[in-house]
Length: 66
Image (cartoon, rainbow, N blue to C red; front, top):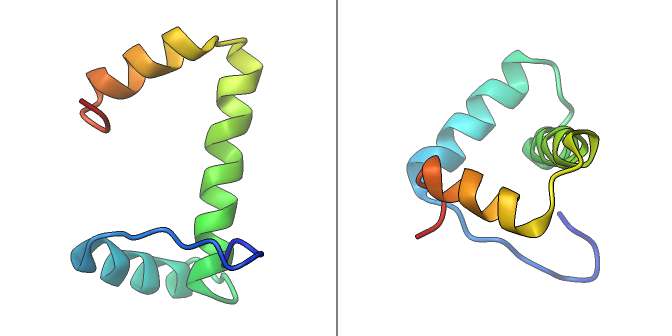
């Protein structure tokens, strides 16, 4: 999925949703869907000019990191 053999673990329920919605949205694979979503989110951070501390605070506020 991420070239070079790197792997990312996600919960089973989330993976099921990724598989379901990637097909509905017309992506060729769940990997393509995940890559697109991540690229879009990273571009948003870059566009906002967010620095590392701002990103960390935002992610904590959303409950993604503690």
